Image (cartoon, rainbow, N blue to C red):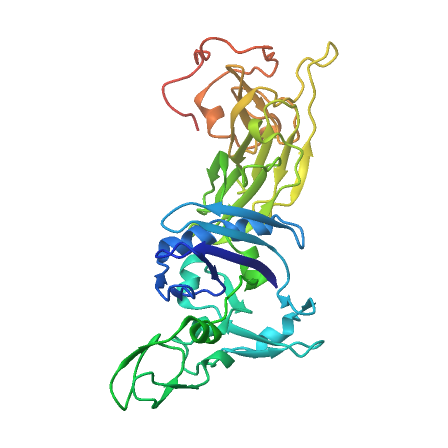
Amino acid sequence: MLSLLLEIKTECSSCGNPLPVNAFVENVFCDKCNIENTFNGGFWNSVFEDKLKEIKGFKDSEGRNSKIMGQYNIDMLYGRKNARCDECKTDIPDEEFVKFTESGMYKCAKCSREIFIRPATDSLKSFMPSACFIVDEDENLLMAKSEKPLKPESAKPVLYSCPSCAGSLEIDGKERIVVCKYCESKVYLPDDLWFSLHPVVSKQRWYITFDNKSVSEMLPEWDSIYDAAIDSEGNLYFATKLDTFDKVLTIWSCTSNLKKRWSINNLNIDKEHSHIAVTEKCNLYVWDDSKHSMYLLSGKDGSVIKKIDGGAPTKDNPYTFSMNCCETLISDSDDTILALINSTFVRFNADGTRASLWGVSSGGESQGFFSKLFSGSDDEIKIPESGLEESPELEKAENKPRI
């Protein structure tokens, strides 16, 4: 399983003292002033925003510190680390999580420390839909919400005498002002007693785990998008940069109802010069307009079907295949490629050889739609080295398509 490590501290909204947040909860009492701090959706949205996307790119045990300013100023450490016992540093095996359909305790296999585990709540899933479990929270913070609260040692009743009538007061640590059942005096508990019931809480690490399959099916979220396309079946294709510091281009696809299909990032293509176009057979052309060659990818899984090698024009071969300076292209119904390069129309066969720009395909094959618009034949068009100020006029275009 993939795990997000969290270590969170903020400040009490009343007294300003440090306030550890050692669980996914809506309320935390300050142990200095006993004021309840309420964390709304904005607080947790600030904590969780983009964290799963980030740790997917982290190496194991890689982490990062973060400061978030807002209604609450948040200091946090987060990273990618297997959920584990922080006493002896032993990982919790993935198979152990299968046992926790409800909240419960896991006993560390090495040191026998008990670790609280509960399934991800609906509230947490509203921020992180693929979350599975919350691990090693301070379960005392969940007492008010839990059906079977686990009392800490400090919450056991303590005997104390009423200063007014000397009657015994039962103190459970829930309230600092206790009413004597004998004389009805209101007794304010002194600091040494109150703080013995409420020892200073330090920040601790806790974890949120995610199923690897669920994470792999998540739609990528891009930092920059360079091109997009859609095929005849409604599948979407994107050329993107996923992270601010990402140096590679990611090509990915999803269905029309936004279910991820596949994702690849292993093509030697400069993201700033990337382009994509869908073919008649619902495959994908991907090219870099600063290079000559082009990839044909499978629309089903993103695998490379072939690479059409190109090169600069030479004296012996002035009509080479080249995507250099190609801003856009169309895959015609006869598998030919109509490209606009430096304001010049050029047509290629699927293997990269030059095709007749306007006119009948060689060998008697069915013509593509765009070739039906024109008459004549011209497969010896030279691509200019730089763009023209205006696109060429289509002087050979007739007034309707031909059969």
